[in-house]
Length: 204
Image (tube, rainbow, N blue to C red; front, side):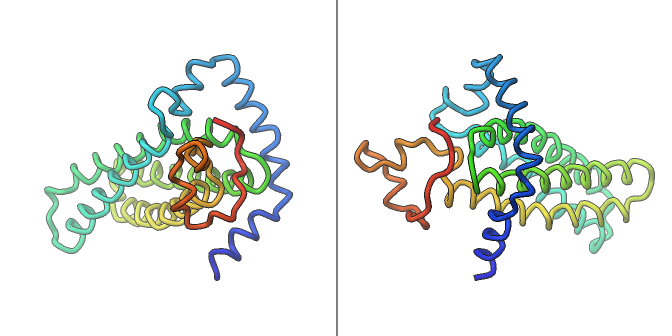
């Protein structure tokens, strides 16, 4: 299948390690200095991934923003513009916050999962830049260009979201090991769509 070929291609890109090695070392060093903050970013006080709890903010904000932009463009209802810009801004802010938690989870990954996670992070960085450009264009009177940029960002966010799903379901990133171990009462291992895959993240 096409998606499996894409994942395999990313997994085999050893050149990504040249970026991942120093970045992961830096992130891990910072988190080691602030263990309580690290625990929160990993979601340990909550019993589940903080990143997974935060990603609905950008997804929801950008979806609402796109719908309102379309209502403005095709319905010629300018009263939706301020709300569309606000929703887009909320989405961007949520994405930046979610990225911090996601980076913390990524710092525990190894091997192929680390490479896929890096591509996911780089793509998200580009998406954030596109949405930032969209907001700047809107604010300077270039609304059509701004809406075009946010539409592009929304499409790319779908691709990045798929990669995020692969990280969780294929590699178990952000998933507690006990959830994958039926001998300890875990249920995830019984319902995982790809149970044969090896979990490539350090214990949480």
